[in-house]
Image 1 (cartoon, helix red, strand yellow):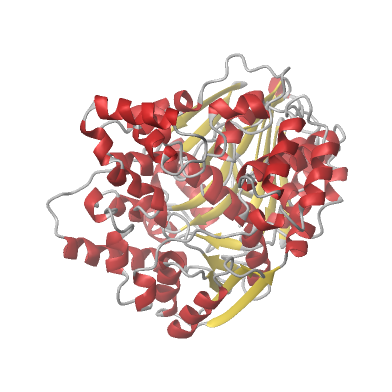
Image 2: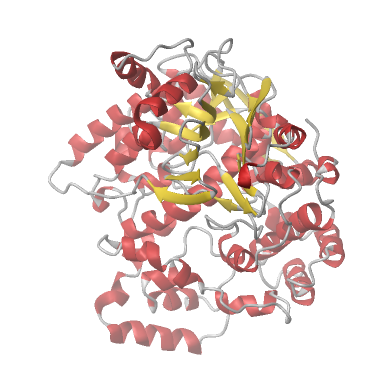
Length: 629
C-alpha cells in the first residue's frame, strides 16, 4: 500500500521538483519504506512505498525501458499472475515479480482500457510520453482513493487531499453544497469533497488529460442480476467457493498478514477461512464502558477458531487525545465515531503485521444492514396511496418524540424520499436550524434530488436491492472504505477487503432478494454458507455495528470540550452556534439524544479549525503539529 501524486502543468510549464517533493513527503505515513519522484518536463510523479510484494525490486515510479511510459500505483492487483502469463504470450519481458510491472506492461498492451482487466484495489497514474497522455484510474468500488484538482496552472492527482494542498496552488474554501449534504450523510458524497477546488475520482472511473484538456469516463457498472432459478443450497455452496477463492487471492504478499475480528459474521468468516490456510493473528478493539465493547465476544471467537489474538481497550481520554491526528489523516470531515476504533485496532495490528484482512463490503453486497428489513416492515403502507396518505396525516398529528410517529412518517413516504443510505443525520427540513442565516443555499439540490440519478438507474430493482445499490454508490465508498483506507494508512498498515471484490460481487448480485434479506434475518445466504466456518452463536447474531459511547461521553467527559469547541471555532459563516449549543444542552440534560447530530457538527468544526483556519497558504506545517509518525 502506498501514496502517490501526479502533476500535469498547462502550456508545458516545467514541473517544480521542490513542490513535487513536498507533495510526496506529506504522505510519508502511506509509505515509510521507500520514496521516489519522476519528472518529464511539464509532468511529474511522486511516490511513497509500503513494501508488500517483491520488496526488493518493486520501487516506484516505474518506467519501461524506453522511458516513455511511467507509472505510480497504490493498491494490489490480485489477478496479476494470470495477466502476466497472458502478457508473456504477447511478447512482454518482465524484470520484477511485482504487480506494478504487470500494470505497466498491461497499459503498453491495451492502453487506457487496462483498468477493465484488473481484479483488485487500486488508484494509479500513468504518463504516456509518446502520446502526451496522462491517465489515472480508481478501482470499481472505491477501495483506494484518487483525488484531483483543476487549477489555472494545470491538473494534479493524489492519494490524499493534503498532497494537493501542499502544492500551494489550491484554494482552501469550503464547498457550500458539500457541507449541506455532509449534514445528511456524515461524509461528502463523491465526486465532491469539502473543498471547492478538489474532487474525488468516482469509483469505477478513469480520467485522461491530453492537450491541456481533462475528460472522465466510467469503465465499471454495478449491476444486480438475481437468478431466481437456482436453489438456496446450490447458491450457498457457490458462495463458499467464491469467498474462499477471494481469500486465497488476497493472501498474496511477501509481508506478514493478520485480520481484524469483531463479534459479527463478516470478520469471523474471513478469519475462519484464512486460518484454515495459515496460522492467523487476530486483532480487536473495544471501549472501557459496559455495553460498548465486543471484546469478550471476539475473544471467544478467537478461542473457537484457534487464532493468536490481540486486543485493545480505549478510554474516553485516549479517544480524545488521538482525535486531532485522525482529523488530519482523514483529509475532510467524516463523522463516523467508529473511525477512532479502526485507528486504534490498526495501530495494534501494525505492531505485529503489515497486511490485515477486514470485513468491509459484506453488508452492502449480501444484504446485512438492519435497515434493509424496512421494505418488509412497511409493506402494509404500500397497499394503496390512500393508506400512505393517512399514515402521513396521523404522523403529523402526533407530538415529536411520540412512539410510532417515525414509523408512520416513513410508511407515508416512497423509498426515494426516506432512504438516503445508512446514515441520515439531519433531514433537509432541519438544516435551516443548523445553518447560519446568512448562508447561501441557492442552487443546492435537496437530498432526494442528489440521489435521484441513482434511484433512476435502480428503478427496475426491488426495494431491498435499491437500498443496496444506493449504499454501494454512497455509504460504502464515502464512509466505510474511506475510513478503512485512511485509518489503516495512518498506521502504515495495508488493509485488504476480500468481500469487496468484482468476482464476489458478481456472485452476490445473482442472489435473489429473498435469500439476502427476510422479515426476520439479514445476510441469509452468507450465514448459511459460513455455517461450518464460524461458531454456532455467530451464525444467528444480529448486526451490532461498531458501538462507540459518544452518547455517554458527550454528556460527561466531553461536555466541556464540546462547548469550548463550539464557542471557539470560526464557523459562524456556516453554522448557527446558538442552535448547536441548544442541542448540546438538550443532550446533557437527557431531554433528547442528539449525539449523532452533535458529533457531525463537532467533527466539521475540528476539521475547519485544522484545514481552513490554521492552514497557511502554501504550507501544511500547522497541520503537522497534530500528527506524530
